[in-house]
Image 1 (tube, rainbow, N blue to C red):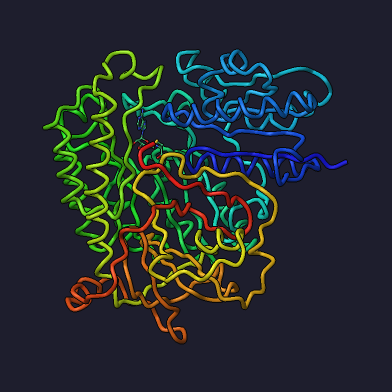
Image 2 (spheres, helix red, strand yellow):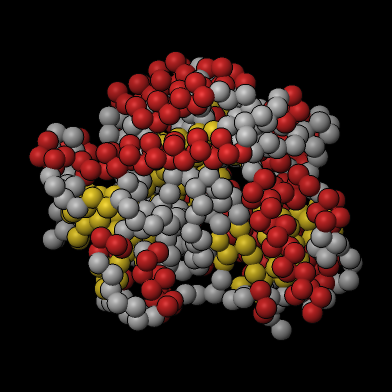
Length: 551
Ligand code: SAH
């Protein structure tokens, strides 16, 4: 009989990709996705360790699944990913009903480990070496890049895909657990990445997002030749049938001129750059061991803006890092007010065992102060995001249609609710990104069963990653369409499908349109915040929870 798997994913894009690949591998062994945990033969949590909150959520979920395991002792409970690598045996100490603990460097073993457990072999723990556990080579070998064949049905949308450029991280920022749980930075060969991208395009994929912990540090040496991200982008840009290329996350110091020129000159590369600053103060950046001053960050931003005046730049910021004074916080606030970020992901500092800040600095900013600073920063970014979006009113933008909007998805699941006023329909994504990819993979959803001509509220993204909602037939999902923007909120633009196939207004014309900036069109802000996850609602991976900023 077919076995059924339920998998919940917390954390970053890396985890979303890992879950896709684990599911694909198990499907090749005859597994299918379960619709509920009650009908699952295995329940997996693909976990994140970046903040305590993400771990707490998984431990609570493990507490809940315990009852199911008591009812059905044959149920396999698995903890995969970063928390598995970080907590190791501790997971079974806290939750002895867990059968599988598998770190991110050992995911290729999941299918055989599942078979072992099914055969009565008892619980299994498979993790990689600690960063202090041997030579660099030995540690690197213990973190195997996991890149098996893809399964288009397992992606949130068939026309968008994540492609890994490298695993691990060597930056060792004082606050960050990632280098400890994802191991040393290891690049994949450019040829392998291009082959994977070509395969994806042949399967109907139109947009590829390259992912690496610091993606722009990408470097591959082959004999005398070195390929950097700019060279890789050039290779990918040449793939026929591919429309868009994005890449996340960038490290400020590696935002080199060749990369900026590649973004400017390669037509498929999106003008969207996520380059986290983390803080506005030199002293704090030093304590964070970020490796640059705010002057250097601003210099980088200046080069970027000069070459790409209309690119969307986004950032991450941490509030309440060890010793952060009011005056230091003020520098972050000033940066958010003046930096022109399209949006920022904002976090309260969460001390992580194993990191330098945890060992050598004191988490001395009271929780209430962190909370208040987060709120103040959130308000400043919301204001900045809104003023960045207003000039788009009255322009025409090309969007890649990602799926049914969260509003319509919810409405479909609740059935016949009256059509809300369109102003109410804009469901912006919040500033904070904690667990922004949280979601479970479940069976096919209702939208995919609906008529392709049915008019629903769709959501898509512009080349500069702005979310646009509009009413249109379902069949447009996966296509590039032009939208006339009629309204703007801080996180979302709303508009109508343009007549015919007119070209999108080039970004260069945006700011020149003084009239557009001052038009008294509806401004949609005071609306409840919901996350619109990276990938829309079509197909799988749909459960997107309302977000708690800075949780
Ligand atoms: N480099 C990776 C993941 C880093 S985690 C990537 O983005 O692809 C994402 C963000 O979480 C970081 O940029 C930082 O702003 C925040 N973060 C990391 N460690 C944190 C901690 N200990 N407490 C609070 N926020 C943290």
